[in-house]
Length: 199
Image (tube, rainbow, N blue to C red):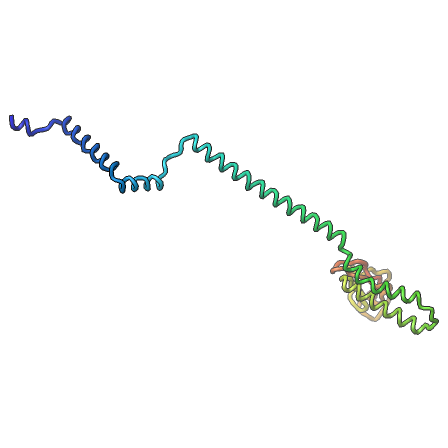
C-alpha cells in the first residue's frame, strides 16, 4: 500500500507540470524587469502584421513612391525645358560674337566713305588696315584662310579648274585664283587653284 501512495500516475504528473508552468508564467508576469525584457524582445522581433495593417503600410509606401516619381518627373521636365531654351538661345545668338568682331571693320569702312581726301596712298593704307581688321575678325570667328600655293592638291580643300605644265611635282598647286576658307576645320569655301600636270 505504501508503494502505491509513493507512486504517481502519469495523469497526476501532467497536472503537476501544468501547474508549475502556470506558476512560472505568473511569476514572470508579476516581475517588471522580465516584462520589460519581454517588451524589448517584442520590439526586436515584431509581430507579423495583420492584413489590414499590411494594406495600410503598402498604401503609404505607394503614396511615397508616387510623390518621388512626380518630383523626379517635374525635375526632368524643368531640365528639358531649360536645355531647349539654351539651345534656342544658342541658335539665336550664335553669331553675336562674330558680329561684334566685325563692328570695327564696319566703322573703318564708314570712316573711309566720309573721307573726302584725294590722296590715293592714304586711301590704300586705310584699305590695308581695314583688311587686317577683317582678317583678324574672321580669325576670331575661327574662319581661316586656305592659300595652298606649292602644296599637294587636296580635293577636300581645293577645287582645280585647270592643269598646267610646270616644273613642280605633278598634282601640286601652282597658283591660287581665289582663296578658300575653313570654319572650325570644315571647308567653308574651297580654294580655286591650278595644278601642275604630270610630265
